[in-house]
Image 1 (cartoon, rainbow, N blue to C red):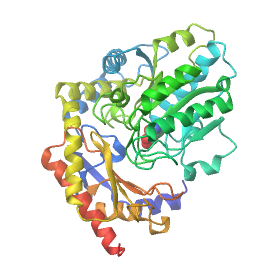
Image 2: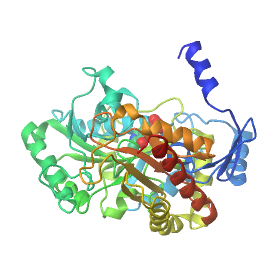
Image 3: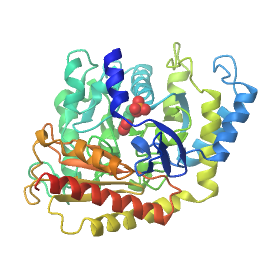
Length: 443
Ligand code: PLP
């Protein structure tokens, strides 16, 4: 970023001074409620004393016990916590500093596994349009979001993109009820068309985040793709960077669909935003295959398993468990949806209110019947973000309409420990901000 760009951004954005629980304040003293946990990160809000104390205590011992010299209590404790959360055979993991690195590691684990079992021709990935997956080159290569990837076309690892799996916007010939089966069938057709022996893995977001707007896997979809992947020796990678770590209710988002992936990524909520931390987690079958071979699992970084970050992760996960917050997240799903629906009652542009747990999205469309998005030039998402900031609300609007396949979306991802009063303040302010923008646009 050039100096001029830095200055422009600084001039536009308010400067935050501090946060407490669900609230943040800027240098003018203005208060904001954090309705989206930034980009779905802060699952315990801000400045939690117990998390801060855990990090401080860890820093008092050592900042980072370099992973290739030492193990640490924090790393071992976090590993046991994650094993307990994931259950089943997802027992092995590598720690990284964020979501993109986690996805990158998942892709590498898949390639290493296919190599280790003698399937070296399996080099390609299949993913879906309207998926995020991250910002490093590997992750961007499987990302289905044209405006983010165009500049790098031709420089990616080979990947094949399928239609989004979205019951609100079923693929041609399907209904909301059959969307899952239709999208699963599309996966099998692609595997057969390109040759199963060329496909390393299928990667998807179990609840699609910023690229689609909290889109849950359509009914029956996840189980069907599990069967298809197994049938063709294709690994299943669940990218749970945004929807995982309890954001949608269960610790693993895909657990709700009754499916275990071979490999999964998790980040954002793992250390609640207090430290940069992510993980790529895989089954013991995969781990055993790759670690017993020469040149095995080689995806470490300098900050792999950063000790202070692991200490933050331990504290965050322990608080969530002790306070039973995931039950609350699950129970709040229908309340958040109905509060939003009530507050937005009569707003014609509301096409869909959907999501799971504390991960709820409103999609705005120009026409409810055809689900036609508003023209990109209207920049509704940007305007809603600005209106929300003025109203003292942090939410996460994304312009979904650049390629005409999605409406503008407004994502809410409140901290898991929000009070009821805070949750209604978030839904009310979201509705007010949306109404203001639509009204000022004459819509
Ligand atoms: N995967 C998904 C599903 C995401 O939503 C994101 C970021 O929002 C990423 C990967 C990349 O994570 P990060 O921004 O921490 O690199």
